[in-house]
Image (cartoon, rainbow, N blue to C red):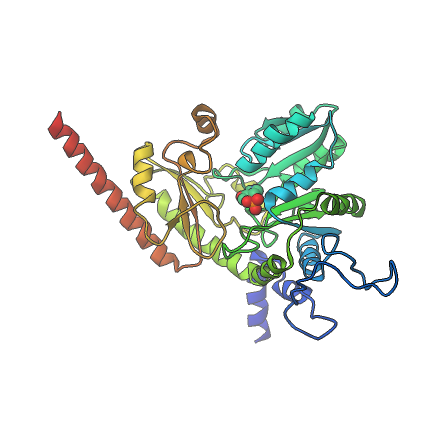
Length: 410
Ligand SMILES: *Cc1c(COP(=O)(O)O)cnc(C)c1O
């Protein structure tokens, strides 16, 4: 029995970090014994005398429900300080505010569109310059650094082409050049990858995605490795005010409770689907770090416990029309932006998340006209495969008809 348990645990821990630790990191309420963290829906806290309180004075500065999720994330990401924000972008915004006019950022070229907009259309106005580079080659980061560079910004895997960057190698470059390294860990989640253990200084999340996990909230997280940087970020959180409310904090805890279990299933189904797509005659390229042909496969293996739940692919018929026919033909995969929820989603980046990027720039980043992104949910993998199969046959039939119609009219 014990050996069976041991074998199962070895298998589990090779995929995930400790679920027991996660579950028991969520505190039992010290006041009442409530096993679910209470929602402290209050704006202020009564003081016994001026400045004498029970650890909380005003809910922008601190709220017990928010504090519970903040401490939980600090533990999960192995940092000193966790902070919860009203959105992923508010979390990114707080990190950029560590800089001042004249400082520079070196960022992954495949960056999340909202971060690109924030860096280039908001912070450039304040004199913060951003250089974008392909961080999947660490030497590019080294070359892009100038004496003014203060922050290096990574996403790994990236969206939607799942490019992988070597966190430890880039952390060493950051350290040698006196820069902070921040990793947007939204796609991997701490269940698969803990950038601070690889040398990163700061981790951010769009908790809207895998941490929340149920497509029912917008939230952001910052975790700092170092206490002093954490204190500065906490100052900025209070000074600028984009805090996560108590109900959403509770909802986020509720989501994180099953993070390890969900991620395990997302990864397993994504691998099955990526392998199915790889051999499909209508598919050109498949982007999934779990496939040995993926250029980042070895690095992903080294730094992550799994390859995540996002799979992208292009069609042999590399046109927008073909992609649109496909994404409107799926039934279980719902056509929507976002990712990381229990329901599978399909999107067409060229027309949705990446529409604002000029076509040439978009294509250079690997987002071709027919690129389709799947967020693999928690349905049975078999049912998802059947849905993709029927979408492929509908798409092919549509094209045959269009072809015949065109031929006839000519
Ligand atoms: C969605 C997303 C964000 C932005 O988060 P919001 O919660 O939508 O503000 C940032 N980074 C990545 C990688 C994302 O996918």
